[in-house]
Length: 270
Image (cartoon, rainbow, N blue to C red; front, side, top):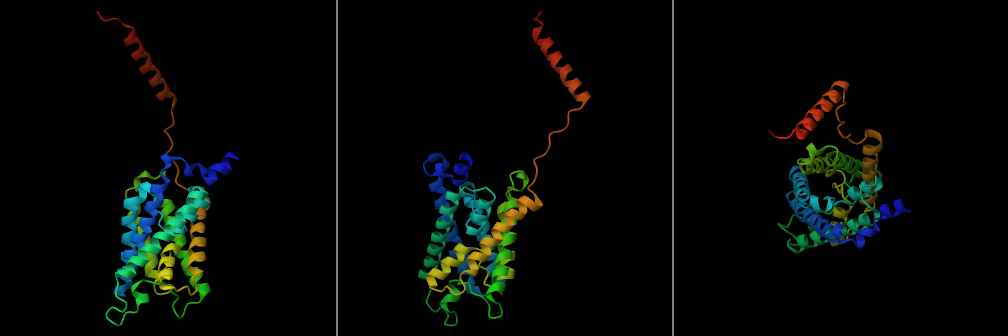
């Protein structure tokens, strides 16, 4: 019963010390910035520029809100961490809701600040970064692409944020951001590189475009769960450094030093 309560995390709803409202606001703002800046770069029509924009904004957002909410800004990351017990179920659900709301808000702001037909040759769908499968890619292939994009992302998140690797904590945002960049370099020509169900939903809602939208939810979520499970159960998390073994000589030395210290304390001053 206690394990079930811990898994659900129901106490977080009433425990003010947990800071759940602040974490939800952080996730909302994080995905808002992701969709505004990442999708805003789609207008360049340059795959490298778009990929760097998404990667850099992810790195920046994680650096800014990571200490508050963990900086998930992606339902695939949140649900992957939930499956391996890193995030309580109730917090996970609320995170996904906040992420989706933030992504929709970010895309809505981007649309409000964009011309309907900029430079006449850019359709508004392109301006807002709505994802869609390329003509040569089937929905099943699209699912596979999105699956592997999220798998590598969550695998890297687990490795970069492993508590037993404190040395990687400072560069974790950059490493995760670069992983997002690589994912977009591969995914943009094939699926538009959703890689994030909330990010895909934000553009889809604003544009009312839901063609093959299931691909951008099922693929990343399944990939994220797979990545988390592979890290924990196949690769194995990093191990805490073992304390140096105490040899017979080291124990004897410690006992001798303790005796000397005790004898000094018992001798009265002259």
